[in-house]
Image (cartoon, rainbow, N blue to C red; front, side, top):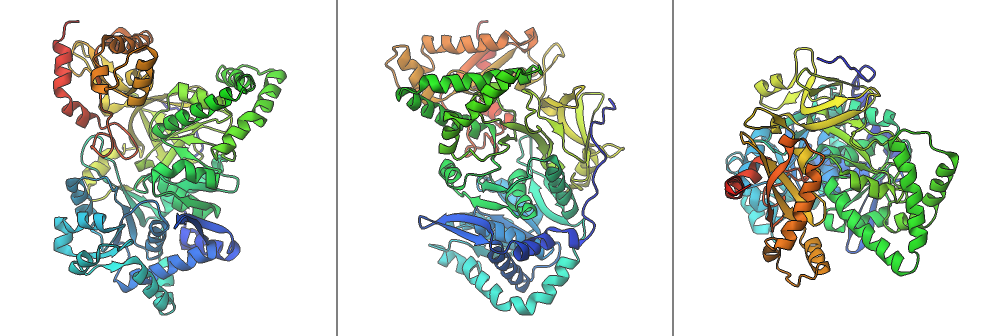
Length: 620
């Protein structure tokens, strides 16, 4: 093991209930009573709860949960989008010393059956009739009949009656009526919370198999939040947009725990298609997105830049962007930056590009961030040229969220940053990154063998990621340990090193490499239909059907150039010898991507087994 411990010793978790989220929440209701806590759009208008109102609603729902028989350590399952009721249910459960689980709306029947049977909820909260239908079809629900609560009850009356369901509105009202008589019971529950108590189970997305319920405790989550506060990226008025699935640990952190700890203001965005509208309205100080979102934002910014050029402001825009590019390049080289370069970059950030950032609602974002998967260098460089510096982060569900984050103004392309305060990291002999932190999970629910396998004898959490730590303490991720390709010559090949050089170039959208047990690597490449048509039109190709375009020799030749460019920076065993263009992108709803847009490698390779076999049988 490489003994590179790059951080201070772990922080201790919160010691008792007085340090917990419930106590902080109550303090917010007193000290920040009239400050905005959570907002949402309903009926075309913005609605806002201040901290006093938020506190009252959470306590009323907690009292209602107690009347339904919710016991300490029971589970409350939530299947809803990013809306105020979801946040209220989550916090109300914590106040009852219960455990929350959020289920992805995109889960297939078998996946949902596994999750519910594993967490065994006493209460299930569903968004509407369509989600209710999914739950009443589950064997576990039919057998154990948990209390079901429906948020939007339109069209659900008959089905609700069949399962003795109730509406969210009615339950909240009943909680308000009994709150006073339940006050002592609720206080006793809150005061009995221990740091080692489970606060939530986060079920992994299952990229390589059946999902596992990761246990995150009150103390561990407090340690994670305090670590992020000490990181320095949140020392300002915290405003965020809640739009990523709340079944994912990072969104749970921003929307619930960090918002409570910082007395922040969360804006709910239940429809991701309205994300930019909500961002423009809310103007968050903290904005985190997965690479897919940043790539789509890039397309929107490029369209805005084209309009500025059409208005005759092109020279002004490009001069400002060039000043920022130069400064960013020198930062990457870790060279001394002349004062003139710094001053030119300052002016560039203050001028027309600031107006552009304001138009998109990102002018107040102190540390725009990216997590869940690596961000392509060209995307980072594009946004840096606009004065938007995207900070990478790295962590696992098992680490309670981010464990490594770029520091303000210290972005290094290729690195995911430095370990957070309280996080220790080292590299095992086989290259696997290991993490030790007070925020780490206590294990997997109902899986003692998997829990034991997760940790080394010395208490290091095995990340499953191959990487390195440089002399400055920066962390670099190479690949997933279980996803490494071993070719017929026994050579280890990192597929993401290949895929990241191809995906997103020209009209190519996604890429997956294959070469397990083979003499060479092949790749499947999906196309972005709009970019493909635009490229074809520029080449004088009149065809618009994607299925026909991907077999056009001129399109195939253009894709070959992208592959050749990627191959030029790869070793011979890593180089792609054959590829196929696919007309359809891989999607979450088809089970090919996780809800955070990670590739489900096994699923994709199995579904395209014929195409892969054809590539190996084709003449080289």
